[in-house]
Length: 611
Ligand code: AGP
Image 1: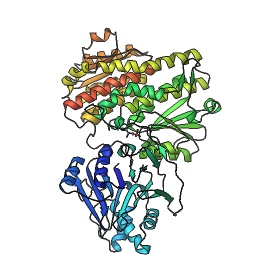
Image 2: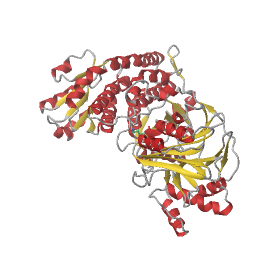
Image 3: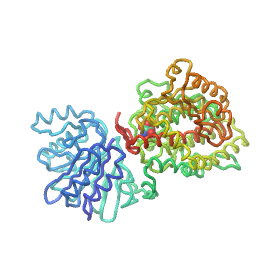
Image 4: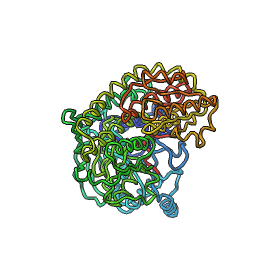
């Protein structure tokens, strides 16, 4: 997954592009580059590595000109090197392209183009697009029509920006399955993979849809389909505060986003509940009472952290709505020939709304006749626009690659959905709904308590940060919490961490226990607390080290371990929302101790828009 940006206007394009790329670096950061169309030529600056290297190069070798494109890369084809860095050019350097996505038929295209005399300089799929446009321009020398013809020959996903040396007054863009927005300014216009890149300049946005092409000048943006027919597009206004997308004084986006969670919960709940009437308002989903009552099964489909949120959602929906729920990894669901039909509700969960596997699973489910709703963060994202109903989690831009606030917001959304289904199916009484809504609104304060004691965990992180393996144990609705906690540690500290349902210990994992491997046990108040305590004892009896998450006031746990992290008491069905916060902080603190790049961990990208 990569980040692209383009600019056309009165300002120095390279400055705008570099600034925008810095806001897109979370999408990929193994190489970067800029291309400018000016004075009848295309000039480029590209380099391997982090964006700061490109900034230094542009300082030493500045680029003038007011029309340009830029790219920050997460390599899919070809190693992260300068010659593979975007922007790419055609044989003569007359045009340049930046691209986010994968051109699945690029090898065939490349073979045909080489047979036609084109010379390639890189290993990337993107370069094939530059030469394809060049070839198409031989027909009528019209770069817009050539681009449209070229894209009709492309299979796969793309969000692209194109400039041509002979057309410095236009910037071209197009998308299919990869996100791309137009920013509409005053005498200047932009393209970008995501909103934060252009928010400092404009709040007026146009979302490109699949197989649409944009022809952009300083004063207007025309959108067409690949047949050249103009399409009227709505200009949307973005409320996001630019500061929100910055670090807000925290050392890392991840820590900022962990501390944003109390407010995020308030935002996700928003005006969706009325405690007095015990009503839940999720009209955006377009689900009727009849549909809720006749539901025979629900499939929850997602990837990574969103998948673990789905696992929690299973417990919530089955407890409150008494409907069978299957939770599946999107990368498995889409190839499984799933048992889905018109009576199945499929819920896809995605922070970015652009995860390729989840998008493909959504399309598979729709092809099988299922109603598909999405629990999504990014408005206007591909998933948000393709589901039958989108439940936005309102977590704001999540820049840290390791997801934190979006996960908590997903859990809130799933609880609201479970409550609404439970009410619609006559299984949750008004008093019970009132009680849960009240407890839900208590959560921000509970999490503020946890955050206020974050420093108390430093000694645990200091003591265990050198360990090479961790085991996380949870039961019931907190088994997914253990999974998510272990993923956070893996992702940002690069420590091998795995999670098990605690009851599974005796079926094998207990062989792992020794003095070198800390065991994080989620032992907060629950129906299975005593069972969890037994698991803790099993670990201690084998000289294992336990770090226990416990409910404030629990003194019994201290008979077995002194490494206790306390969290405020709440209803078990809400406990994953609180319990995950100390696990996020633990992973963050350990990763900082180990010197990891917390916001941009190695090998990862914020949104995996490739398979
Ligand atoms: C979470 O910390 C990871 N960055 C990753 O597992 C992520 O949750 C997954 O790629 C799904 O992303 P999505 O929610 O944007 O679809």
